[in-house]
Image (cartoon, rainbow, N blue to C red; front, top):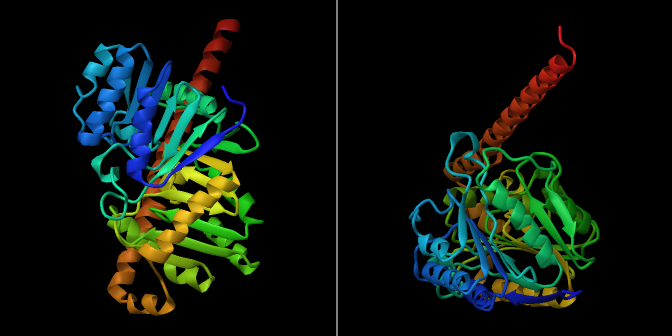
Length: 393
């Protein structure tokens, strides 16, 4: 395994998916694939065939698919893969007690040497250039030590997939592979969060911040950090969805526009296609992966982000960001906000904000609290049993 990292920026969903298919076709030892949505479509069948062919030639193939994100997929869809020696697990079958917590990751690791991290699911919507066809998305492939770190995390998720409850350190994990790359593993919980912590640290010194976000509802504290960066002279630009697959989340994001523009942030909306990318560039640092800047990704879902400090990768990602702003997006000005300001629209935005910022998070928090109480009762009962065994009456 190489001691340093090399990075390839995949600027469209189509390019990213095709690169993953090529990597699976050349796998020698192992393939670990994890996705939120796996759709029975042309691109889905190409992936299933590639995975099956790899298993047939003796590669250890394992696939994790989220049960909610791929709700419409037939249960026998991967039977041939399993029959040829591969393995597949549905993550968190649909149960009321744990329904809220989803595996939103999009990860491929090949031979523990090459990893792909980004926002694309395996579905027809992502198999395009994001301009004329398909949703706007992409990702990065990394050759180097971080692939082994991601493979080890996949092993843990493999065990979690069929568990009824999960235990893990509060607030997620940061796993540095080298000083150049950190893997940020976000897991359900309402304490510290490795992505939020890293963003706050980097925002303290960043001079040029470029954010592309499909769903944008950062915490109040993170919004404060963005405004503070502008106040000390940084330029902060945010590219959001002019077309969205989740209309209520778009309403929620737009409810923040007036405040953000007042604080000096530059807001843009992407127009040609649905925006689904998750990308943050701060000077020569790139954050890329599956996590949105919203409460569900930051508190409730399982997510993976990479923090990569590499000037060449940052330049490639920033070049695409600049092209999107110059050619495919419109700025949100004070005049535009004034034109959008009907009372009915503001009411809808407030209701959407309550749904995503309050209700969804509160339901998940209540379920986590019940788990902790149940665990505390079980531990108490075990102590009483041990005490009775060692101190008979």
